[in-house]
Structure formats: structure tokens, C-alpha cells
Image 1: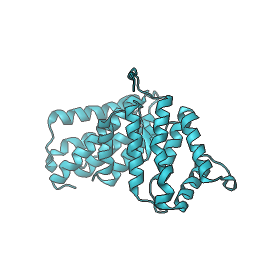
Image 2: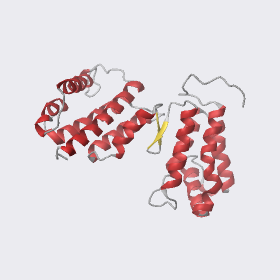
Image 3: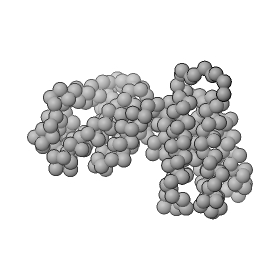
Image 4: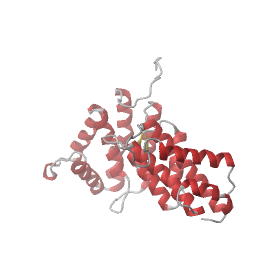
Length: 274
């Protein structure tokens, strides 16, 4: 095998050749057995969606499945960073089963996990979640958000978190400021549904009245954080001077709000309030 210098820098805006090949190999398993497992019609449907909605090419010029695979491979191996990531993301999006799909979720989950494994081993600062790339490079971060999105929290809270994730993950036009707003709103909507109040700051102290044990320091910390996001240059509310919100901060807020939603949901169910 030989000695190679280990990677020390996370890939965030570029993908090296080895990473591209690894990612292509992760999805090429579909090429090898997709039609055999689900039929030629399923493969044609997958390719038609990519041809029309990813490549944006005329339907009547769609070539054979072999040629479409060549287009996909070329985009992953030779495209720009954005082109390669968008190709992989759209491939996973259209591979994920929907009401018109011929396949089960088993293949999608296998490919998603294979892609995530390659991203981790090659130190790429993204992971696949909800069929989209999110700027996380830690399984702890991924786990916290995934648990909240896939858990038993009220639909409103989960929808706010999903919106925050989408705003954070948009590589072409990320909206970190509104991602923070949606993350905090997820916590606020859940706390208010349990304890009442017009704001998160009003709801937090009332949680104990509802039978949810909360340490005073925790309540004060969250009230302080809520106040900070409300007052810091209009992060949550419009002001003349807008605070600069970067990806790192938006990601941090999403992770801690997701963890809080999961915790509060569990505690509220134990107390019989959900």
C-alpha cells in the first residue's frame, strides 16, 4: 500500500481527485444493479429526472442509460466543486423513494451511508442528511440534528429545524441569519406550546410549573442566548444595523437548538405535557 501523508485539512471548497473517485465509486453501485433489482423502467425514470432537472437538457435528446451515466461520472470527477456536489446531491434526491418510485428505501440508505463514509474518510466538511449535503464534519453534529428531525417532537418544531437546515445547506445562496432565526423559533414554538407565554424568554421559567425539572442556570443560559440572538444587530428582528452571521455560528445554533428540542420533547412526554 505504501506510506501516504495523512490529510490534515478539511475539504470545504474543493474536492481532490481521490475523494472524487471514492464518491463516484460509492454511487456507481447503483449503476451495477439498479435495473436488475428494480427494472429498466426505474433506471430510465431516474435518468430522465436527472436529465431534465439537473442537466436541464432537452427531453428528446436524452441518450441511452450508459451515456447518462457517463454524464454523471464526468460531473463528479471533472466538474467544479459546486457542480460535483450538486450532482451528488441531486442523484441522492432522485434516488430517494417517493410515491412514484419503483424501489425501496434500502438502496438509497446504503448509498447515502456509503457517501457519508467516503466524506468522513476523506475529511470533507459535509454530510448527507435528508437527501442534501449539510456543512457538518462531526457525527455528533449530524446525530443531534437527525435525532430532532426524525424524533417525536411536534411537527411545527421539526419544520422550523428542517427550514433552518435548508437555509444553512444552500451552497449557492446560504441564508445564515434566517437559519439562526428558524432554529431559535423551533425551540420557542415547542416551549410555548408546553408552558405558554408570548416568547421563549417568558416560556422557559414556566416549564417547571408544568412538571419539567429545569436547573436555574440552564434557564438563565437559554434566556441569555435568546436575548443575544434577539438583540445582536437584528439576528432575529429587523434593525438598522445587521449583525454578521457566518456558517459556523448558524451551524452551532442549529445543533444546540436541535439537542434542546429533543431533550425538551422527551421531558415533556415524561411529564404528560405532550
